[in-house]
Image (cartoon, rainbow, N blue to C red):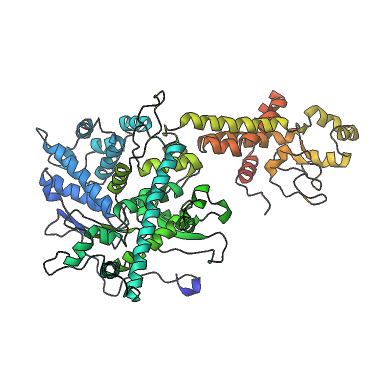
Length: 632
């Protein structure tokens, strides 16, 4: 868009730009992958190493190109590596066959079944089948029988997925995990702040009167802050005075976060926000402070990225602090640093991590939130600064902390509780269970793909939902039953309007307007909107029309039945796309009230009303349930 259209020019490459070729005509089996994230390294994937025929190698390479091309679904290096591993694994299986296929059209459904049978005992079989199928669908030249097999629903892995024992942590287990992570984060903050203060004192000359070893520590802390390493000899080893003061890891981690500490931060952010692992580990440090540092409730807005959401991948996520009066007893009783950091809120955790990683972030020239120092690294990387966080860090943290699980049912008092396996997936599931709200997915996905497969704390959740339902039903029963005009009374009103009107607490003129649908409020009619219990006396009522079901000013007539039926049916349908607790809290009361109205009506009248529903009725019900009729 141009400036006249109110937009801004798009970012374009310079004149003469030509994109790098990802596949060379001379080496078509070597595919160059360029990650979307500039901080990730490019990599060449060699399909010539696959143990299949050259024709299949080329077909698999072309399929990989389709999955990883610009605008494709795979944009991160880790995703491309996983896709290549599945191509290589399937090729390895094909290579073990007595008569392996030589061309793409030679692939048969039995090859897919054989590969799957070798993995029947894998707990992640459903995931592996889906990944392989996603890869193979992009391979050119497949025969119609094999392509049909790829497009069919996989009953085995679907059933395995439904039966998978995903479980959330109990409230007590979740709290123990959070307490352990907060303990690590607080210790890291105290150590790094002390190291930074020592370096600042050395730079300011405040250590000149201190003992030699203290001056050396200050000099070393300042050097490590600026280089993320210690002074070294020409041969590469630490200088003698550095060795006297401790190990390299001790010196660097005195002013930089360690691997286990960054894992603790990730655990806190995933559990407090409900975002998934990649969204948190790739989060930027840049943020906006809508509170303006003005002294109110602190907040920050961070632009998070979830690539598989496609066009909706970028999300502005608000992180809000707790009010000062809402601090927990644990934090209030802690040291000054605990009260300052306020680790009970996602805002507090984010800002502390932003502060502690600011120095190494500047050294790397990175805008990543997670920056830390690794004692070692694979692939010849060695020790040094890293961004993001891999899943092995969470496993290492879990194994190091050995957090006890809840005692097994029936266990004796002397029985040792098992050790929790802390995973980000279960932490996110716990967040969904406790908060009952979707995060970066729809409410239907929350119900079907998260809570439906959750096996943790099921009995407690059922009790909570049953209690909420009972409260809402009891509330409906205690409300005075709405006054309903029957068909006989409508006929009587034609000859004796005053008598029928007095019976229902209104005058004859109001009755005529009610029966003429001039007072309709979707499912009922209002006979006195200036004296509503939902507005000051003498003021027009501006409450939602859903509240009319509980209002003494509402009256129901036969012509309201079609809309009562439509709204009642839609509320019942929302059970399948809403969490049970949320449905009980939001819809159980009006659903029960509408059930009561329809039960009191003549069954034949209800059946006739259902048959008489028109498109206009449906449109009005849809607008009402979408809250388009609510007054601002």
